[in-house]
Each structure stands twice: as C-alpha cells, then as structure tokens.
Image (cartoon, rainbow over all chains, first blue to last red):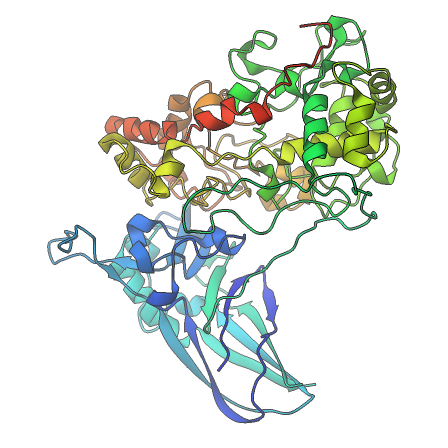
Length: 186
Length: 427
C-alpha cells in the first residue's frame, strides 16, 4: 500500500509519481481515500502552498477538519439564465440536530461529520520490475452533479461548506466520478 | 526498480454548467509528504559570503510549524546578518536617489513607512491621501503619480506567486531590463524577484526617477554615517560598491520584514486566552461562507493566498497593469493580488487605486458594492446580489476582528527602523 497524501491542483491534468516502491505482481483494482481520514486531517499540518491554501476553517471543521478535500469553482445559469458563481467545496461538515441547532459536548466543542470516502476502481494491471506502469485516472466532473442524485445549484445555492446535507449528497455522488481511462506499461 | 506513475485528467462536458472550472482537490492514500525548495533562481553563482553571518529567522512560540519551509530566496543572495543590516541603511538612505539636494532625495522608505506596515499611509505629509509621486522633472514638475498604490512589505519572503499587484515580478518572467526606463536587457536587471524592485524603483519616473549609475556613484561617496565601504566589506567581503550588491542588500532587508505578533496571531497560538465577543464574532464571520474573506485572504497565518482575483470593483478593464497584463489569460482581466490583511488597519487607502479610504468602505464594497462582470472570480459568489449583504452588526464585528490583525511589535521593531546614525543632511 502506498502511503502518501497528494494534492491535485490542476488546470487539466496532473502527473504523480509515488515515491514508495510498489510490489511486483498482478493487481485487480486501485483504492484511494478521497479527502482525508479524520485523524490525518490535522489543522496547520501543511505549511507550504498550494496545500496550505486548502485550509478549512477551524470553526467549520474542528481538530479533525484541517483542510478542504476539494475546491471546484465555476459558474452555472440559474432559473432566469443569469450566470452565477458556485464554490463546490467538500470537507468536514458541521453536525446539526433536527432543529438545525449545533449541539456541543461537555467541553463546549461542536460535533463534526467526516465526509471522506474510500473508492475502489476495478483495474487489471501488472507491476513488473524495471518497468514503469502509467495509470491514467480520470475525474468525470459532471458525475459529481448527476448520480445517484441530481445536484441542483438552484436548490443548494452557491456554497456548501456549511451545508452538511448538500455535502453528504456530493459525497454519495462521488463514488462513480473516477475511472481508469488508460493503463500503460513502459 | 518498480515504478508507478498516475496521471490524473479532468473530463466531462457539463450540460448545465459553464466550463470555467478551477478544480483543486486532495487524493489521499496515506502519509503526508512535503514539498520544499530553498532557492527560486539559481542562475548566478553564490556570492562569497565567507565573512558574513547566516541570518536567523524569527520563530513564533508554540508547538506548531507556523512558517512555511518554502522561502523565496534566490541562491545567489543568501540571507546574512550583515547583508540585512546594509540593506536597512540603503532602504532608508534618501541619497539612494543619486542626488544631494534634499528636495531631490528619495529612498524606499520615503514611500514605504514602517508605522504603516511599510506602505505610504493615508496621512503621509509628503503624499496627501497616500498618492505617491516620483521625483520631479521637466515633464512632471510635481512628480509623476504612481499608477498603483503601495503594497505592504510584510512576509514577502513566503510569497512564491509573484510580486506587485499584477504578479509580474515572478520567477517565470523571462524579460530583462526596460527600454522605456532606459535599463538595458542585462541579467542583473531581471524581473524575477524582490531584487528587481530596486532597479525598477530607482529608474521609474513615478518613483525615484533616477539611474542606477547615479545611485552607485552617490553611495560610493559616502564614508561616514554610515561608512558604506565598511558595511559592504562586512556583507560581501569587499568594499567594492556596485548595483548588484546594492539591490541584493535591499532585497535581504525587505525579506527580513516578518510580521506574526498581532493580537489574532497570539490568540491562535494560545498565548492570549480570548478575543472580545465582537472580535470573535468577526473572526467567525471572516471564516464563514457568508463573510467568506478566508478563501482569498486565507492562510490563517499570513491572511493572504498571494493569488490574484477579480473582486468586483469594476465592469470595464483597461488597466495594462492588471494580472492579465502579465499572464495574457483573458480570465485574469481585472484581477489583482489579494494583499495580506495583517496590519490592514494601518494601510489605507485600499485597493490598487486607493479608492477606499477606510476599512468600513472596504467592508461595504464586499457587502453591497460588488459589480458583476464576465471576469469576476467565482469566489465572489455573491456578486449577483451585489455582495454578501452584511448587517450593520456584522460589519462592526468584522471590523473589530480586522483590527486584531495589527502587529504593534512589527511597526515598532527597531531592527526594521531607520538606523539612528544614518545622516543624510536632510533630517
């Protein structure tokens, strides 16, 4: 298993070469965590840009919510075809009770919701000694907004960092966003 | 050796959404790794600094690594105690203009004043309303106005994204010199780092309005208060004075200007227990999606991303000095650097053209004054409503928080002040 956290900051494509060695053998899939496991999402752990610019405010994420999982910014056309900006940001959510209140523990700290998830993508490939295996991982952007839930900006508005219902929907839509489009052995 | 390379591509046409996307996300597979580099430009061999003392950076208290390890220091200009000190004298020495008459003297410190976080200040007696002007000439007897207002000299060593409002002073800039300024296309007149600001400042008609030759020839004549040959010897191992060493020393001093001791900084480091209720409400608003100051003025230590945004000031964009003027990316029209908010209480007027005289005016702009255009940055998500529509109480709370960003240690630090023994004859 590779042990690395990598930020993908992309106009259109990004190449990542893991520093750890990979065991020789036949593989059936690739798994990765999208975002951070809570115990690894430590505030202030990144000091250099661009990672440090992904910080998630402490008031919104607490001790296990140091950084955004994703920032996807753009524009949509609303019901009157006016071009409006959206910030589709995913990270740790704030727990609210059924009345929309944020309860606290005995120390006065808020509760938070972890929205990271593990993806497993079927892929048959072989890792061989002295050969570079190039795997192209594709993020199909539109899938964040389509399956299994149709995400409607006109309903959820321009931002979701403080809307756990919306972020939970985004998380559930995330499971089919990534595909393996190409595997090459060089 | 077994090798694995992962290429990530984006794909998909969005039937409803327009494709102006700036996707940034984390893919986490396990343990953290860090990027680090210690030099930005490595073109020139390092100066022989055998006699100089390596500079030690200040370290805030606390158990967190507060400062980046990535610092914008070119390999041909390492930081030394003696280099910084020489740079401090030159920064404040108004004979940097290369001329003796007092009315024709000007230095960096003429426009970059410590008590205003090294900006000009709205109460500057020489520059009313903070409108800086160059030294006079026949064409501009009152001095040519500077096209943009100052930016603060604060924590610049941690900025890897380009200097000036448009970011054109950047490691990627291949240009040399400036024909309009009469500066030849020679390697020492690059546009890659803080050193570049020195020749630009000396030559620009709207700044010192001189020449590097005049500056060098003047500095060479000064052997008392200070003894420049002695200072150059301590910094560089030689008494020889030239432009390259002048610019590098000033750049070292500017890089040494570090601010991290505002009330806010002490609070996040847990050196003080609380902010006031209004300050805390303002902080929460700053770090919320409603106030949403943090996406552009984020990085909780430096209060800036050092990136560039069109923040809805205008609907027409014809300033050749915007970020588009450097990148030629049409989406950068009307985009300027988001400056640090540290010491913002002291750095009026605001924006690159100084249009706002008070922080209250700035807050009101983001609340109800944002102007929508095709080039507005998507982080200005309330632009379609004119802004984030803050209540008067929210505005007051936000103002209270912004005032906690004032670092009184920085603006009074004698290490950053005018040397007491500097005598130009115009005190």
